[in-house]
Structure formats: C-alpha cells, structure tokens
Amino acid sequence: MAFKLWSELNSESRQNLRPDFGLREWSQLSDDEKHKIWKYLETHFFYKDSSRRGPEYGFFGDHDEKNHRQERVLFAIHYLNDLYKAKSYAEAYLESKDVSTACADFFTIFMKQDGEVVLELISLYAKVAINSGNWGYIYKDKDEDDDTYQQRKIEWNFKPFDAFAEDINEVFSHFGINVILTRLGFVPRQEEKIINEIFSPVIKSLSHPKWKEVNQLLADAFSEYQKNNDTGFSNCVTNAVASVQAFLQILVNGSTGSGDISKLIVQAQNKNIVPADSFTKEIFSKIEAILARERQETGVAHPKKEYATERNARLVLNLCLVFFQHCIGSLR
Image (cartoon, rainbow, N blue to C red; front, side, top):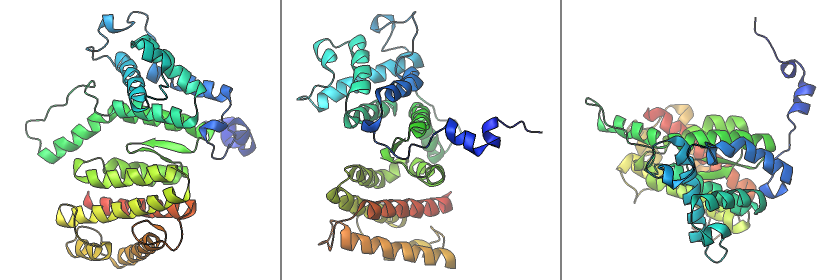
C-alpha cells in the first residue's frame, strides 16, 4: 500500500501549498523571492568549507567540485566585466581581482541587477561549466568505437552543467520564471510535458559536434525570441526553419550547403534515414508547409507580408523541435 501525502489527496490543498504564478520575468520577483531562489541555488556557487578559502589552498589546480564551483563564479564575473566594459557590473572585482570580490559581486548582481544582467551572469556561469577543462578527462575504452566514445565524452563534459540546469530549472518552476536553462542557453518556458518530452531530450540529442551548425541556428532562434519584439520574432522564425534545413542537409548530404526542405525530406525517406510510413509522410508534409509559409510571410529571408508575432514564433519553434524529435528517434 502506497502512503499518500495530504497534498496528493486534496487538490485544493496542493494549489495552496504550491501557488501558480503563471509565467513571470525576473523583474517581477520580490526581493524576498530572489533571496529564496538564491538560498536554494547557493551551494552551486559558494560551497562553504572553512578548510579551503581560496587560491592559496589549491583553488585552481584541485579537482574538487567544491572549488570548481567557485572557479566558475570567478570566470563568470571576469567574462561579464570583459564583455560589458562600459557597465562594469562587477565593480568590486574590477578594483581587486580575486575570488572573494568575485563572489561578493556575484551575489550583489544576483540580488540587485535587472533580469537581463542576472540571466547573462547565470548563462556565463553555465557556459563555463560545460567542458571548462576543470572537470577531468574521460579516456577511451580499449574496444570502444569512436562514435560511442564521442557520445560518452559529450555526456561527461556536460555532467556539471546538467546537474546545475536540473536544479535551477526546478527552482525557477516554483516561482513561475518564464525561461528554462538548456544546453543551448535559456529558452522560453513551455508546459512541463513539452519541456520534459520534447525540448530537453531533443536539445540533448543535438549536442554531438556533427550538429554544430544546427545548434547555432537553433540557439540564434531562441536568442531572437527572447528579444520579445517584432524583429526578434521574425528572425526567430528564419533561424528556426534554417536549423531544420541544415539538419536535413547534414542528414542527407553529410554537410550543409544545398537542398530545400521539401526535397531533402523525400531524399531522407527514400534512404530510410527518417520514417517513411504514410502517417509520418503526412505529418512531415504539413510541418514543411507551415514552416515554408511562416518563413515566406513572417521571416526575414524573403520580403515579409507581416512581422511574426510571439505566437507565430513559438509555433515554429515547437514544430521544429517536434520534427527533430521524430527524426532523431529513428536514428537511434
């Protein structure tokens, strides 16, 4: 017999225990909410250990995850100032470049700066966590083929990032923050089912170096979407559709450069690279038609009839991810 919590037996109680804030931007959070978020994520940034206080205790050379986290803070703060010199958001670190001032500035920015600055700082921290050279090296097994080793190495390099992303996304979901952290950066939050079953696994599957150009276009699409204006949404549509075209070109030809989506889909199906059953053919045909129409009417690759809206851009992004999911599933 499975014991059930009170909240599992009483839906009204569950709603009171975990309120639904809808989707909110960082700027809509109260100081108290930001503080709570910080406390839930604090150990990712500051691993409190009185026996190790900084560089003099092996800060840079030690393969201890406690120190790696502070090292990521240091680099994130350094890069933030370097990227935005006129603003110099990390003022203390600008005057005294050491781990203590970096940590102090990291906390101050997290609590006091606008959402754009906070998410940029978290993005920098997350980027450093990906294959930063301080996680260690994974060796190839004696009888392991190159592709298997490459995939295992990718997962190993993403391990610190994935652990951080899992925690920050779980915390952000409780406060209704409107973005999630993926291997491509921050993307707009969707329903949990869409995130868990489509967005996250697809983006994870595209981590292989052969999809580098696809990833860049898809990342640009998400970045343009976040601008939250007509031009950004139109650029989002253009980049998202281009990512599908690049994906199919690599799939069929081995590299990007030539081929329209409609023809590439047929070629991929004829080569049994992607599903070719009647249902899939119908779905692919409809998706291709929608993508072609949106790129023609609202993208920037051709003269626009109108600018894309947030709704258009989100639809195109979701269709592209669904398309990738269906194709990638057949490649396994």
